[in-house]
Image (cartoon, rainbow, N blue to C red; front, side, top):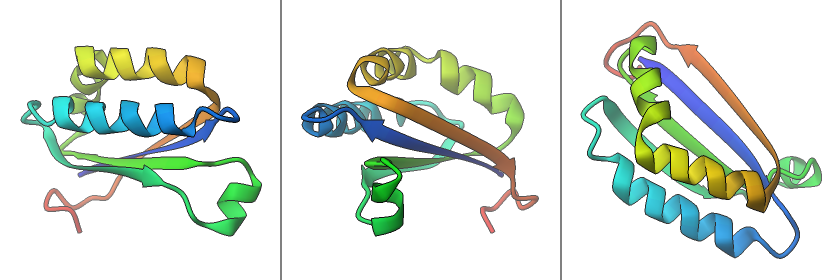
Amino acid sequence: MIEHYVLLAAKPDRAAEVDAALETFLSEIVVLDTVREITAGTNFNKGGLERGWTHGMLVRLDTADDLPGYWEHEAHVRLVEILDDACSDRLALDFETGDKNGG
């Protein structure tokens, strides 16, 4: 199982735009049969907020071979375009859990 974490730092006064973009993305990307689980939301962790991280997302995929199809999907491409404009920073982290069932 692949864990794909994304941290987002929305620009001032752009958090609502990031919220809307993530909501649209979540509804569109689920058509990919390689996406096992996906969730996103607004950060409320004080330490993360102090570092500027306003939003987060977690995507679970079966294997690293599934990442290119996810990255190249039109919903992901549109999301990245919006985030490039609405966010001051973005961080992605991918790792393999070793358990194909998510544990």
